[in-house]
Length: 225
Image (cartoon, rainbow, N blue to C red; front, side):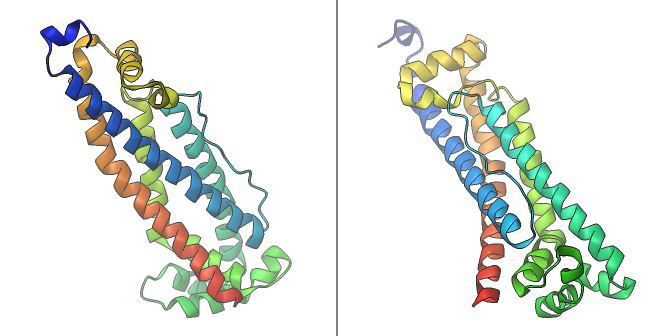
């Protein structure tokens, strides 16, 4: 038991809580890395992109890893914007508006994109059209991606941002010391509250992001059968 524990008997419990919350945050980060790489693979295969996969920086901080995901998503959004602009340019205005209409059936949207996708990509596949519809013609998916970026930026800018990702493997006492090195000694409770606050949003955003990417990959599988 640390000497300070005699003065602050709640510290052992707090350390355990920090350990648990830190692991949950890392799980969400890992899921976001995985989902982003899945999306990258789909775009490279079906929309002719040349996006690189990303890896968690194990010796980096939480902020550094949040920034890696944000930068990857921004590159993805840039590629999707190119496809969107091409669709807008090649399609008649009424057909382009149908792509943005949430009431329009997905099969109809895929048929619309199929008319011009060969001009944009040099080849026409139903899978490519489905990816374009899911990612370009869906404000819902765009909103989910933007929400994840916002939450990651908030976490990176918070007092959690400077905490190292790898401290989990060093044991609870090392985590405690790492946190004390990142925040004032009297702010351990604030660190716990910050974990809890950001995890609520991060879990929700990460799960929706993962589900959205899974839906894209499942749609592609259905089109290639």
